[in-house]
Length: 90
Image (tube, rainbow, N blue to C red):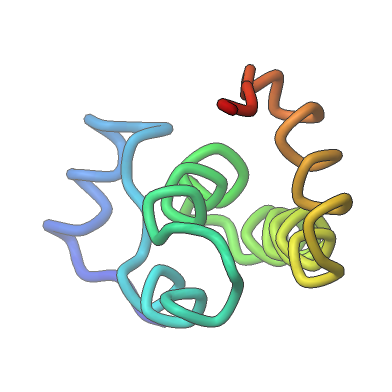
């Protein structure tokens, strides 16, 4: 994806906060997690304009979201990895 001057200026000003929308669309509804979880992971690992860093980040995101496909126990392990506290109610 080619960035124009305005995109590069925005990426420089908001370094670490900008994620390409095509990446967000790629993961939307593909995994059994809420969309905001995928957006969070993409923001954490793919907020760069360097293609190599984005590819490495995508591999991490796919690996983490791939754990969620296995079922409940894998999803619980993924939540523990993210240090999310969950409780079961009677």
